[in-house]
Every structure is written in C-alpha cells, then in structure tokens.
Image 1 (cartoon, rainbow, N blue to C red):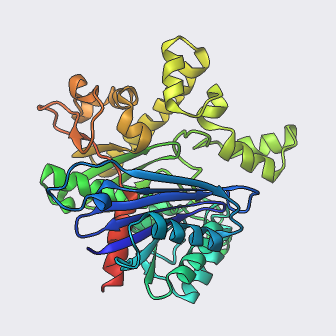
Image 2: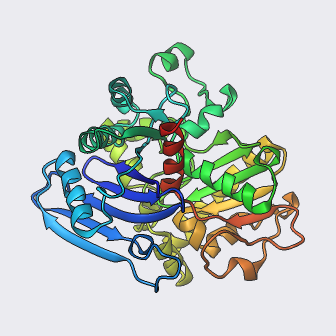
Length: 410
C-alpha cells in the first residue's frame, strides 16, 4: 500500500482524501469546515477499500463520523483530522502517507508543473494571493498546517493553472497597454487545469488513441464552469482568464461581460469595486438571472414554463455554443468532446442542447445513450458520429495524488 494524502484548503475549511496509489482507491476522506467560527464541524469517512481490503472479504459500506467542536485555525483542524484517523481509521501509524499533495488554485506564470513545497515556494504562493485573493491564502494556511502535522513527508503543490501554461501568447494576451499588463501580471491563466488534464487523458485512453493524436474539447460544467481546447494533449485555449470569473455562465458568476458594464454600474449605480466584485462573483450567473444557482432547479422550473429559468438556461447554452464554435475553429475540427463535473456528468438536457447545432461538425448524439445516468466513462454519441462524445467523471484528487507521488519519488 502506498497512501498519498490530498488536501484542498480554503479560507475557513479544508477537504482531504487518503488514496492508496497502488489500487488508486480512496481509503478515507473528510471535510473540516467553519474554521474560526464558534462551532466548527468535521466529517471523516472511512471507505470500503480500507474497511475490507481483501478481495474475498464480504461487502461493507462506508463508515462516516461527524463531530462539532471549536476549531480555532487550520493547525487545529489538522489535529482534528489526525484524531479522526487515529480513532476511526485507517491508521496513519501503520500506513503513513508517502507524500502530501496540495491543490493550489493560482500558480501565475511561475509554476507550470507540480512543485515540491519549500519555504520559498510558500512565499511565492502567498505572493500570488494578489491574483487569487479568495483562494491562495487558504491554500497557504493549509500547507503550513499540513507541514507541521506531517514534517517528515514530502509536500507537493499542484496548481490549477499549470495545465494551461502551454497557451500560446495569442491566447493568453489581453489587448490592453502592454507595459501596464506586464507590471501587474495581467494575462489569461486559466483554471480547472487538473480536471481538464485528467479528463482529456482518460478520454484518450478510453478511445484507445494516443493523446498526442487527438483534438479534444473538454467541458467542465459545475457550479464553476470552464471549457478547454486541447491539441495533442496541450491546452491551446481555455475559457477562464486572469481569474475564474471569465468565460461561461456559472452558478453565481457572470462569465464574459462587456467591461463597460462595470464602468456604467460604477457611475450610474455608484457601486464600489468591492460591490462589483461581489456582484459578479456571488450574485450573477444563473442566480442573477433566475434566483437559483443549481442547474437542477433551473431545469425543473424551465419544464414548468418559468420564463426566468427558460432565459437563464438559454443564456447558459448560448455561451457554451459560442465557445464550442470558437474552439472548433482554433482546433480545425475535433475528435473527442467530453463532458465532466456535476452538470456535465448528470444533465442530459444540457448536453443535448449544447451539441444540438453541431451536426455540421460531425457531432451526432445518441438520445438513448445520453438519457440515462451512469457511473464511469461512457459514450453518448451515435455509432456513426465522426466525433466521439463522452461523459467522463472527473477525479481531481486522484490526479493531484498521481502528480504528487511522481514528484515525491523522482
């Protein structure tokens, strides 16, 4: 058994998974949240892979444990996590993690591959907080707490932006004053890179063709949503930009917007910079259009004829089609289109609507294959479709663990 601990830290919470890399099976997972509040909450789940490791063992269910207690900071949260492992298993004394992997949202232009964490790397990640003030500070807190909890293990930072370091200058450059952009590191970075990398590689393996020979479009559609054009395994364009706000319509984020909208709102509605930030990130997207941020609610209300939900759905699909058309042009055609994340994996309605106009490009969806929900990778295009369309469940934690172990054992 070769366990790797994967940590995804935010400002007031962190998620974790302990993964056996020999079987690529999750042994335990958990969530520590409400850090710094009067009452914190910790969940720890021991997965069946840890409860019944033998192949001939009877089937067992996951075991979940929950507790509420004050959790002052991330360091205290890691102590709660360690206690949960000690009390409920699996034992970290018997199977200590070979390494600890950390999800870091923004690596800027400095980090283009998974990186062994050193004090200087910590400083650099913290410095990049000016580009990701909502994400990187929490990651730094998690890294410091984890290094204190696991001082003997290698710690590896895996960056959401790294996969998009292959973007050409024509794709990542914004048409503003060049010196100003350089001084303030203004450019497209792209996000969800860990997911896009995992899904594109899984899709290539599934269709049995070398990744280097494929033109792919991956649609990561969740509460946060992005699309990426991938040519020969390399990201050549992606919808998110300097921040995760650019691109598609999302649960609470606006996506693409005429910049003059902000100027008008500042002048006429007298909204401050913080007001605008809050509006575009937390009160826009599906929520701003229809009052709900979950696509399941949008679909339910749309079926009942709710005009706001109908418009929100149509705007959502229109933006996806806009990017599909652009990426078809950038790639010169496409071999594989993959849907992933919560909406992408579960909404047959969104998938069908998004691809409805792409018959000219060789996309032929099979309604019967598209309709049912299923587990694992599956084909939803017709047998005679020149373009293969897939649903590929993403697994960012496993991808982080793979990259972490590769760095730690190099």
